Structures are given as C-alpha cells and as structure tokens.
Amino acid sequence: MLNGIEKKAHELGSSVIFCQTESFGIKTMKYLQVLNEKRVDGLIFISSVLEKEYYEYIEKIEMPLVLLSTKSDQFKVPYIEVDGKAAIYSAVQYLIEKGHRKIGMIGNKEDPIAGVPRVKGYKAALKAYNIPFESNRLTYSRGFSYEDGVKHFQILMKKAPDITAVVTISDEVGVGVLTAAHKMGIKVPDDISVIGYDNLSIAEMSIPKLTSVAQPLERMGEKAAEKLFEVLATESPVDNCIMPHEIIERESVRTIKYEA
Image 1 (cartoon, one colour):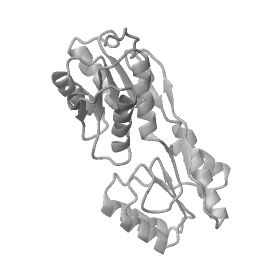
Image 2 (spheres, rainbow, N blue to C red; image 1 turned 60 degrees about the horizontal axis):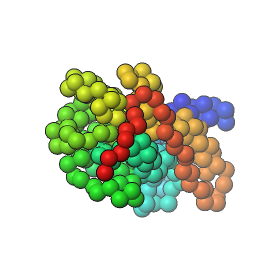
Image 3 (spheres, helix red, strand yellow; image 1 turned 30 degrees about the horizontal axis):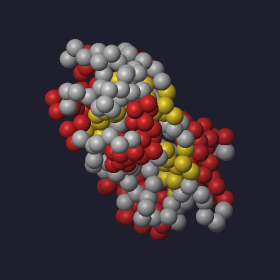
Image 4 (cartoon, rainbow, N blue to C red; image 1 turned 90 degrees about the horizontal axis):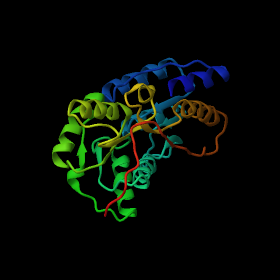
C-alpha cells in the first residue's frame, strides 16, 4: 500500500511523510499535530479505526482526509477498501466448491476493520450453503501473526479434529498453520486444506505454497493517493471505492469427495 501511495504521489508531484501509529491513540494525536505543523496538503489514514477525537481534530484543522483499508460508518469520509466480509465469503465458497463442508476458521473478534467482517463472511457463507455453524470450528486469535497461526491451529484441532479445511484471517496466520500442521504430522493439503488472506510474498514462499485471498494492495495505495488529490481539487463529495479481491490458487487446498 505504501509503495502505491508513494508511486502515485510522486507521479502527481508530491512527496509522502509516513507515520506509524501502531494504533496508539496518544501517538496518533501527536502525529496529527506534527503533520499540521508541517502543513501537509492531506492525509491518508490506513487500516485503523477513525476515532472521534482524530476526526474532530482533522476537521478542526481542515485537513483533507481519505481512508485506506478501513472505513467509518460514523463519519462521512471517502474510503478505499476490499470488502472483508465478501472476501472471506468467497474463500469459504471456494472450499465448499472443492467438496469441503467441515470448515474451520482462525478469526479475530476484536479488530472491527480486519477481524469482525471476515468472521461475518465465514458465517454468512456457511448459512448460504445450509451448513450449520459450529462454534467449536471457530477460534479467535488476538492478532494476525505467524505465532497466532501456530497457537490457534493447535487449539482448533483439539476442539474440532474432524475439520477438512481452515480459513485464516491473514497469510501470516496461514503460514503459522502450515508450520503447526507439519509439527503435528498433519499433511497439507492431503489431510487438511488451508487458505490465507492478503496474498503477501510469504504465501509464495511457504511449503506448500499457500492459496490466498488477494487484495490489490499496491493499486489500493495508488487509488488512495488519487482519491486524496481528487478531494483536494473539488469541493463536491468524493465517491468511495470498493476494490476487487480474487483467490490465488497454489498448493494448500485440494478437492475432496463430499460425503453428507
């Protein structure tokens, strides 16, 4: 995303200041104050909740704002994102079409941007295909890391040893699942299929290579920069943009014969 933002900004004659807030409120507010002092032309807010205090400060200093990989139902701010619910729905649908019915998920219920919608997509897909949701097939990690994948795959297999496939909320979690499965003597995809989310480079590097739901991350960054310049150039409302997702097939999912 940052590559895309920087590339497009340079094409349009601007430079980029990058501030990593790590989702800390005090740090975010300090950065906003610094950016105001630097008199930046506009702000792209990435992958985090737009809290009321941030929005009110940004409005006060009249700084043009675009959201990337997040959105706000509370405030009318233009955004660019992939529909996380629809993307995970597609992942579950893909597994169902491969014959899987006993599908587990490593999800997240604390992150309202990248966690909650994806879990909703998992449940919605099961419901659409008349597959009962079973709570033991869903485990919640606190984060999106490799370590979360290792830990929660072990938990999931203890709770639901009959599952034939696992949907994960990130590629790092997916690769953690691959590692845990290997250590547990579970073969991927022979014994269990795994699908990740994001289509990062590690999905191509893992053994086996990880099938993943792809977000067009660099293009999303470019689009956010384009949208910000659009906001700067017009006083009219700027449209939101839902970016497409796709499933990149690799080696971690196999077709099985469905048995009712």
